Image (cartoon, rainbow, N blue to C red; front, top):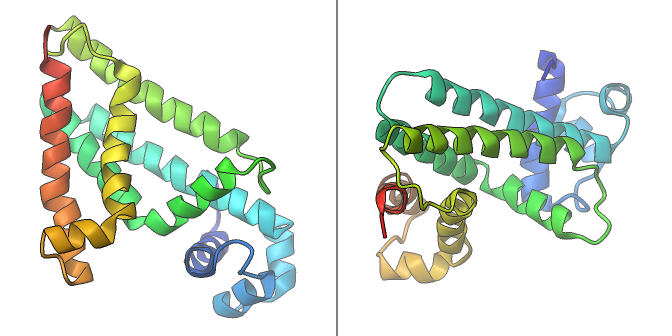
Amino acid sequence: MDLNEKQIHILKVSEELFSKNGFDGTSVRMIAKKAGINIAMISYYFGSKEKLLETLVSYRISSFRIEIDKVIQQGGTFMEKIDALIEVIIKRIHNGRRIQKLIHFEFSRENPKIDFSNYLREKQENLDTFKKLIEAGQKEGVFSKNVNIELIIPTILGSYFNLYYNKKIYSKAHGLFQEENFDEFVTTTLTQHIQKTIKALLTYDE
């Protein structure tokens, strides 16, 4: 995605405000003030607040694609690549959890305020890349032929979001009383648990 430094700066400021105040609770004026620019510049680059959010969503998922491709192209075994991909996925969604929440909310609306066509196309490409890796592993005899590939990503994401949306319960159960403790738990214990779970699913043969 071809964006200049000023556009990226505006997107990052917008992401911060959208995450904090929600889409409806964030005005173009608020974005302009925090970004240190005038409102006209936002109109010039993005046209509207809705188009700005569309661009932000596309920007985030396209940069995600770059990380995924990097993992796929690097050396290592199929298992190592699965571990690396899961680590990337969990890190990305955790760091961007607030904007992810906004995306999910907007996407689930009967009449979304933004066009999700680019987002869906990029997301499908990411899923296809993951699927091709698993299929390649199946051909090499590393992964089971009985794997329901379409459920692998939902299993990864579901494990994370179940923990995140029930944070108060799990934080108490695991003694995670500080935010940094929760962050560390996600990037270590949860990530490792998901890695083991997915590798077990990929190699389980009935």
